[in-house]
Image (cartoon, one colour):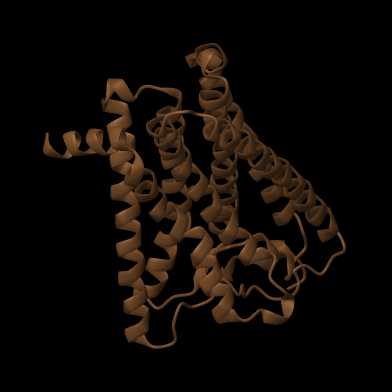
Length: 305
């Protein structure tokens, strides 16, 4: 293939070789996607309907639930379709859409996790200024900035990736369209431009990570100074779910992208891609619901109603 314009479709990595395993993967993905829809849908509904949950923390949690649904429903439906129909094809435009929306939702999730860390920092370290620093207008501006930054980031990467000439076939060693695997098909040195963009995104992500670490150092120092055990328990109960979600998100992404190239194999790539793109969106609502009594009570009222 001389360039990307001659490619009408890509070939994705099959989830399994036998029909029985394909159906098993279909059922597994169906269960995970329904669990993610149920968990995140309940959080969105509970926060939207519960007036006592109209606080900055739950507002950002609602946005996070939207990104989780976006992440999992960008890749999983196509994988389920290919499994049930024993197919590997994805159109060129469909692949571009997958790259854009996956990058968009994952970037938005990380930016929102950073904003949520700031919310926890202000509520514990500067409680007297909480209403001033995190009013409704400030929360809306921060959420809009997170979504807009993610949109711009995803748009730049998608345009840069799909403007490259591709001459090394159209087979992707992944069950969804992913930028590193598309770059492997490029026959031009212009892919360095996309690598530079990825480096910029990595630096931005590192900045968010440093901010999260610094904030939690200050948070834990402030919590340990709280005299009452009940006050410390309440503070930890609001911080630990967020810290667990951040750890799950970062650990799975870093494990997928920073492992040694010598350990790469199709089966390992498949397992790690499922680990970072499918598992966190399905687990996040359950992590947040375990220790948050207000949220559990709101979800229970919503279900019993």
